[in-house]
Length: 308
Image 1 (cartoon, rainbow, N blue to C red):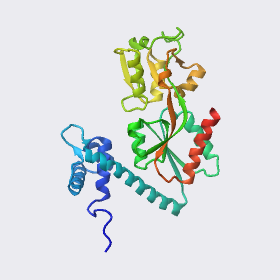
Image 2 (tube, rainbow, N blue to C red):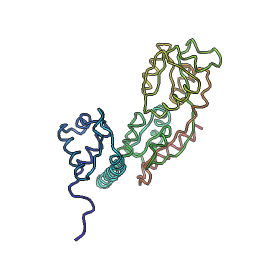
Image 3 (cartoon, helix red, strand yellow):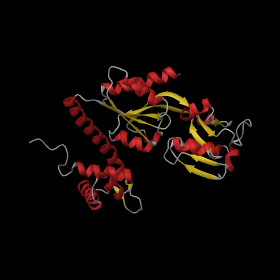
Image 4 (cartoon, rainbow, N blue to C red):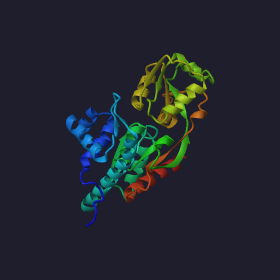
């Protein structure tokens, strides 16, 4: 008799509830996302912990946090769910001959690089349905690890979250401090970063890839308390807000490149060399990507190369 490869008591709903609680930070959000009642989600995770014989979540805090065993299980659970998703979709695609490319786009590239790359791909011989997901880095990282997207494009994630992932560098870019034309700090020559202390500042939220870079810039330039901080990852909100106010906006140069070229926004003259960072393609290590997905990645590379 062949021994079971996995404890038959562990069901997919156990793993799904575990992953969603971790993603949502609690049972309430997980239940809403999964379409289950809170008691059902709590019961599933408790059953999983009983089967494994360890606590996966620290319940002493208001927001559930993973224990050491939970962190360990998370790595394997996300990989297994991603592999299962790929297997199901591979069979479905083989039956229907319907391929789909699923990619993520951080704000750094969702305005210029990704739209042009998708257009290039759809004009090629492997054109198929394309799904583009946008959002902050933690959101896209979660989608990538669980197999909901095949890869994402943007600034390189922090090294402490790169376990099980690979990064292909495409180019590097700086941040800028964008403002409206006619801003009090515009056209006054090179300034110290401390000049922004008396103005509202649009900041990336905690968890955004560029937030540590912005924080490091502020500390290195001895910037004290800012008059007003507004956290956002919305490019459309950022543009609208700086155009109607004296706010300044920490943002990747490529996001506002067209606005700067057309004079709709200006980049304040400040030393931002320390904000230089790599932009590229992040994938799951060892993932077997389909031919259409590889063609899309080639389209991204070609677009970046053509744009120099």
